[in-house]
Length: 201
Image 1 (cartoon, rainbow, N blue to C red):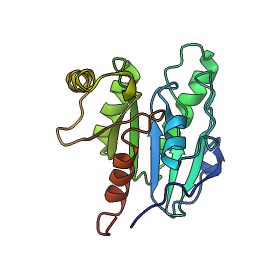
Image 2: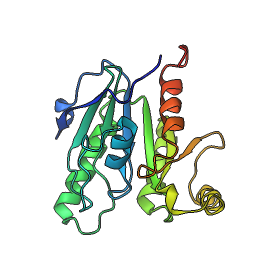
Image 3: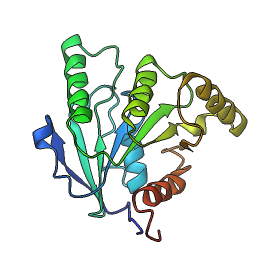
């Protein structure tokens, strides 16, 4: 099944689990630090710079933001974590919403866990990978901002990440740049192939 990511539209936001859309199609979740580039990646996948708001101030997304892709799947942009300047009560609210989301029993088809390739993973990144491994939640590791490094530097950083993060040997790894449109076709195809394995993509 070929998915047209250009047919991506804003669906709505959810401040709690009751406001999430019905589980009538696969749900692909974007997780990661607040400044890792989740909104930029959504815009790049959809080839629409105005689709998701890209804030100059990390930590602005305080809700689960949903997008419908070709009426075939949802993209769910979770609040980013690890933003030091957010007030304690706001950070606690982010954490509570994300915890509710993952523990709600909603069927999560795939998590795109974003990591800035220029920086070492945070304690939150490590905890998130540990949780997904324990809960057997399928995920892709998506390294963002890869245009900032040479290919040799990028490969070296990914190797270093493998020593810090407990991801599986067969984990699907993608290196992308939303700005330079690098790696996007591979990621689109990977999502299609994973969600609809029995169908030609």
